[in-house]
Length: 541
Image 1: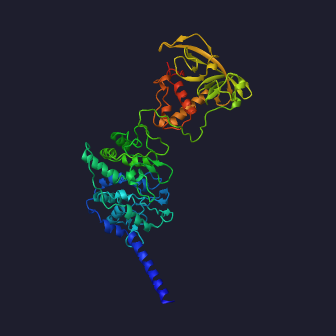
Image 2 (image 1 turned 45 degrees about the vertical axis):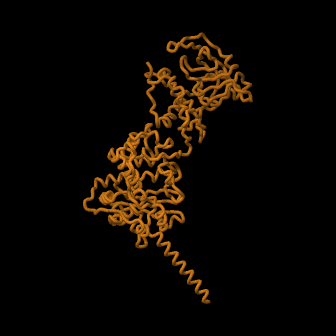
Image 3 (image 1 turned 90 degrees about the vertical axis):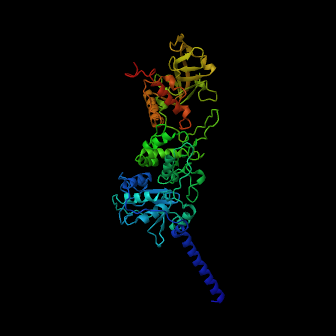
């Protein structure tokens, strides 16, 4: 080999060694520690186990590390898996078991893991970089006293023997050493530094809430969007974002109209204490696990958290599918989003035969003659969900329907179900209205309005009808209970009149994805089971 070749080889080898050394230096936990220094950590003697328990529940430790299937937050054998865009994280065993848990960790090693994101089990003597799926960016703000008390409490819990598999991450995220670069970029060196107190807010309450929310509670870790490297986007902190699995959305918890701006501090505190939100809905999913912990905190602590959350900068970041808030004084009609066509309770068209009674399920176009059905001619009226009809005849797939009801004397284009009740059954054009057979006027004693009994015969197809009226009501009730009752408890039937339900359901378009027919069946069910229309035994005197 020539001398020039040898020189280039040496130069290349030297550059490679410098590169490796530089990588090891930049990614070393010691480098981060040298830049940022350490925090105070009192001696283990004198640890307060009761405070350790408080820090434990505030930090939500059991949610990730509890042994699956035991429903016991003192057994921290780990094993839960978290699917993310980076790969699968397996939550480690953090029980005092010496072989598979953290039983051999010293207080100093526990503190380094909790507040610096470095474990004691690395291949090199500088330690093992921990993935920020473990929220040490928030735990960094814990006081030394709280770290000590938490360590003492956790070491008093049962040792659970459970070997948890290693994380299964995609390249390059499986190169744990590289997390050292992430820590240098995104892990701040300061602990908890109390911020300025907003005017009119109790300082002690504010600072306690600030500490709990920003530190052990690590609320921003879930309720903030993250950048490409998994870092919390500072400008949208607490503004909500997609969950790690990519299957849902963590809500905006800033005091914005797209977040929880309409929640009072008292309502927030009550939610953290009971899990019931301001509209009566109970926390579920991941938040149910969080409330399982916050409900164990002293009530003054959840009050403090609520006070602090109400002072956060409002972040305009609506969840997918929700409309922009309407800040104007104009009514805005929202587009209706229907993901899946609903299965409505309809009978087979073959069951719609002459002489049967039927209930309209799907809004139906109707005509005065059988020859007009299914043509391009404009319909001469519509029958609405809940309308009761009689099948007077059938001609192939066309049916003759008789509708009986009531009309206001001066309004011939609408048929109502009962005198004095705005329970609509049909809307007619002028031609159809002219064919209505009307009886003698009757005055409603409560309103003084003049009503006339009315009857009309119309033609349509045999689809969208049901011969079992009880099945239609069962559908309306079941749909209400599964959707509306998440926020609204169904009132007693003897408390409401049919007219009091008019116009109340479609106001919920922002929060539901019902079709018009589903809305109509819910409304018809509620109206027909109000105190003035429900004649079932024992309900109405």
